[in-house]
Image 1 (cartoon, protein in one colour):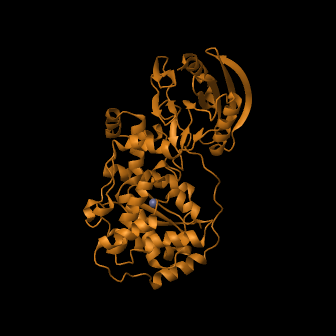
Image 2 (tube, protein in one colour):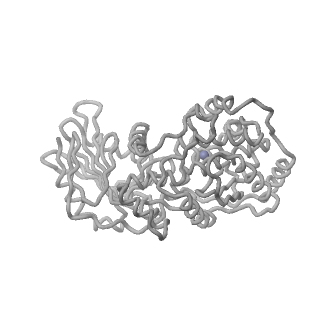
Image 3 (spheres, rainbow, N blue to C red):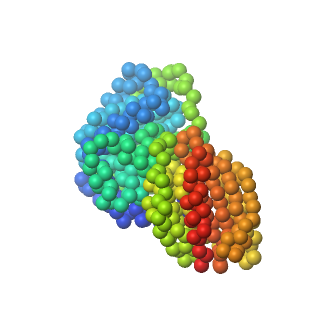
Length: 459
Ligand SMILES: [Zn+2]
């Protein structure tokens, strides 16, 4: 079950995490490069490299690379030159490779492994624009955005005291990441940057461009140009790199703070040659369709038979004491460790557990069936293959309720899931409870779900 995170819910969740996060460098500090500060991170510098190396193996199983010595060498030479102007710790085993895809995109794995799609070379007008994209990606690496994201996700699921110990142990980081639902491939959470990470990568990228002697406007310009030139092809870039608000204006505003204005370099004959060669390559192989949020991982631990009570203003419900609680604006998600992941658009994807929320109907006497169907419609917005298989009335705590059983695609690769929705009229709101588990595991969760429903109090 995927839940689109709407503005406030997402903000609240992020605000919760932000308690443990260092703020990113404010714009006014840009003039002093050493002030660029990476955010909260549970990983060490060496662990960034280790996770990156393991990710490279997964990623390169999933994306085709351009094998053309001159194009590869052009991008690699340019990349290494840009690293020389990056702020902070740049001691990484940098590699720069070209992906055989015409989507305008680029991404960087922790530890300095950068990938630029051939579409970037084909769409750019000059070298400064490609340098800008690379500089932006270098920004993600030196600010350690990938493992910062992973750290936040881990923190949301485990107490810090336990985490510190877990990451300190020798052994596979991959296994630790898998436990919290973070894979290492192209759909990894580590590649889904937040808007604030994007803003920081823009700042660092612009700073690198300026220091490297390029026109510092080039990076933001490239975003603008592709938006206009290829409206249908920009989507890909901006899905990995969500567009921060007023991106162009923000970058423009900090350029004067970088130092005295100078005539920046824009192009080189080497770029024009590389672009020409890229355009002459055979068509890239066809891409795959929509990807699951996570690879199938080992299932979560069995629900504890010991129950704990969660209390909100409109309801209370018991849940297994080994499950985690994630509060949102209108309710709560209760899930075993690893039961909730974050998807491509920052949405929550729940593979196991329950979520309870309250819905205040627009007018008095609003029907339970109407409200329920409205909720199902809303779910369908982010779950294209959601299908109602059974709907029936029942009474819960003496009140009318509706039970809706649905089939859906699980966020876990190749799995189907059951979503069992119970809606009941509370005192001033309609309370909904959704139980989620992969189809193959639903029966084993049924006794837990029954106990939870039995404990539901309406207030
Ligand atoms: Zn980015």
